Length: 348
Image 1: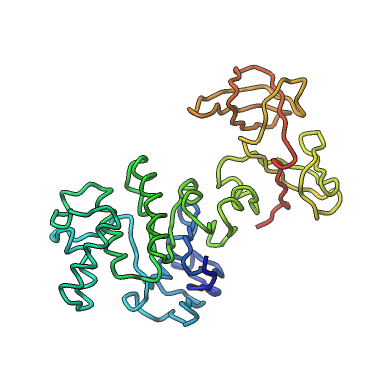
Image 2 (image 1 turned 180 degrees about the vertical axis):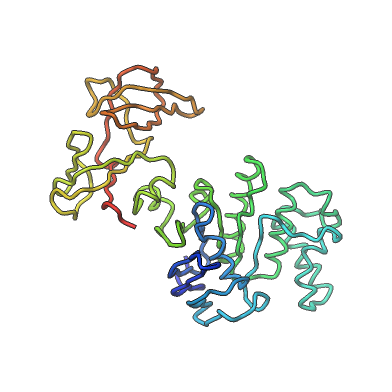
C-alpha cells in the first residue's frame, strides 16, 4: 500500500449552535487506502466526511489535500466525489445519462463519454442496462449506478456516506465485497462512513472509531478488535466482558477473585486496570476443570454458536460457545493468556 498522505485534517473544530461536534480532530488518510469512520449516531463521522467533501467549513482548523490547504476550495473543485445513502439519481435520465452527467459537465466529446460510461457500467456489473430508466432498477442496482456515476469522473478519493443503509442484509453483504473489489481495482482512496461494526471490520484497511466528536482509536480491523484502546471501543466493536482487575506485575492480572497469566506488561505493580475478554474466547468446561465457575442464566441459539449469560460471583458474563448448556447449569470457564486484554482505567 502507498503510504503517502492524501487527505489531512488538522486541529478541526466544528460546532453547531454552540454544540461541539468535532473537538480538535487530527487525522491523516493515506493514498489508495480503504478507510472507515465507525461510531454511533451523532459521533461526528458524517460531519468529518462533509468537511473532506467541502460541503461544510470548519469553525477552526484546516483540510489539506496532497499537502495543499483546500479548506476554502468549493466541493466541485475538489478531486473527491460522494455517494450518499439516498442515491440522488436523476429519475428523468436513464442509466447511461445518469453516469454520463459529470462527464457532460466537463464538456467531454461524445465518443469519450460513451467509452467511459460503458466501461464503468461493466465494472459495476451493469453491462447492458444503459437504456433502463432509474425507476425500473432495484435498490442494489441504483446503488451501483450511483457508484458508477461517482467513479467515472476518476476522483482521487471516493466518499461513501452509509451507502448500503437502505439495502437488505443479503444484498449489503454482496455489496460490501463488491465495494472492496472496486476499491482495489480502481486503485483509489475510499473513505466510508458506517455505524455497522461488522461492515467496518469486513471492508477496511483502516478503521477510525469515533465517539463524542473525538477519535477513540485508529488501526487495522484486527487491532481494533483484539487490542481496543478503551472500554468504549471494546464494547462498540462486538460484545465484550469488561471487568475490574489489578495488574499484579508484568504478565499477571487478578480479576474475579483469581490470578491469571496474560501477555500484557508495562503497568505499575498493583495498578487498577480494566480487563477485556471476548465472549468467543472463553472455553466452557466442567466446573472442576474451570478457572472460574458460574451458573448459566439463559441460552440463545445463534445458528453458529450458543450465546449464554452466566452469573459468576455476581458479575454477568456473556459467552459464545458451540457447547450447549442448560439454564441453571453450573459450568467452568477457562481463559488463556492471549485471550485477556488489559486496558488502563479511563483511557480515552
